[in-house]
Length: 311
Ligand SMILES: CCCCCCC[C@@H](O)CC(=O)SCCNC(=O)CCNC(=O)[C@H](O)C(C)(C)COP(=O)(O)OP(=O)(O)OC[C@H]1O[C@@H](n2cnc3c(N)ncnc32)[C@H](O)[C@@H]1OP(=O)(O)O
Figure 1 (tube, rainbow, N blue to C red):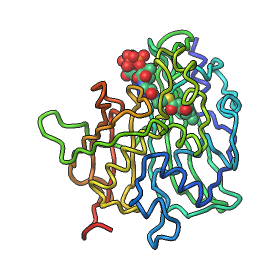
Figure 2: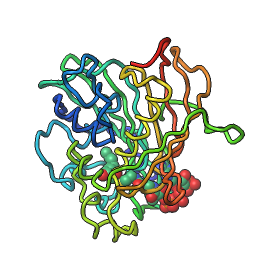
Figure 3: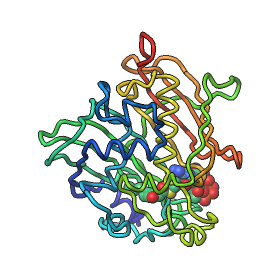
Figure 4: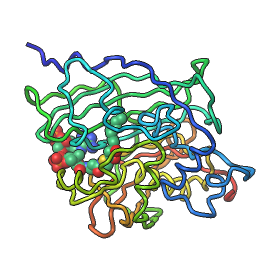
C-alpha cells in the first residue's frame, strides 16, 4: 500500500488574499533590524523608498489582515489530505526561500493573492516536514514572487520514513570549506526583536510566551525564523548588492538552530561567481555568536552586483 502522504504532495490549497501598505513595509524593516540610516527601507519620503525585497515572506501568515490575528486559527486553517493534524505548539519554521520575479509595489490594494500548493512532504526520525509553494500574484495574475516555506512538525509520526518534493529552492553552491568569507556582518538583535517582528503578522505565542518555548525545550522565547532571515538578507544585500532594493533576486535558507531575542548574529558571506541572468551566486551561513551554533544553514542568494558605488 502506498503511503497516504502521497495524496498530500501536489495538493492545491485555496488561494489566499494578501495585501500590504507602506506602513507594513516600515514595520517589517524594523522587525528585521533595519537601522536609522537605512533610509530606503525605513523612511517613506526617501526618494529611493522601496519594499525590502524579502517582504513577501510575511504574507503566508499575514494574508490581508490589517490587525492582530490568532496564530492557531491561521496555521490550522488548511485541511490537507493524507497528513495528520499538526500541533501548532510543536511546529517550527524549517526553511524559507524566495525568488523575486519583478519589483514589488509600495502598496497593493485589493485583489492580490497567493496561489498555494503542497510541494513536498518528508517524514524522518525527528518529525514531519511540510513544504508549501507560494506564488504571489496581482489582480491580473502577474507573478511577483515565488516562495517555498517548510514547517518542521517536531515529533509528528505516521508510517515511517517518506520523502517527496516537486520543486526546490533556488540553486547555489555550498559554503566553501577552504576559503575565508568575503564579508562578515555581525549585528546584535534587540531583546524586543520578536515584539517588533510579530507586528508583521506572525503572532505565534512561541515568540512572546516563555512557557511555550520551555515546553519545546528551547528554554524560553525564541525569535521568529523570518526575523533572523531578514537580518541575513540585509547583511547580504549591503555587502554584495550595495543595499540596492532591486539587487536581491533570490534568497534561501534552512533554519538549523533557534535564536533568542538579544542574540548576536554573525553572517559569513562568500561570493561564488556568476549565476543565471547576470547574478552573482552567494553562499552564506549565520551563527549565533553567544552559542557558536549555526542558525541559518544552506544559505543561497542571487544578487545583481551594481556597476557603480553605493546608493
Ligand atoms: C507557513 C508555515 C510556516 C511555518 C510556521 C512558522 C511559524 C513561526 O512563528 C515559527 C518560527 O519562526 S520557529 C523559529 C525558526 N525555526 C527554528 O528555530 C528551528 C531551528 N531548527 C531546529 O531547532 C532543528 O533543526 C529542528 C528541530 C528543526 C530539527 O532538529 P533535529 O530534530 O535535531 O533534527 P536533525 O537531526 O538536525 O535532522 C533530522 C532530519 O531532518 C532534516 N532536517 C533538519 N532540519 C531541516 C530543515 N530545516 N528542513 C528540512 N529538513 C531538515 C535533516 O536533514 C535530517 O534528515 P535525515 O534524517 O533524512 O538525515
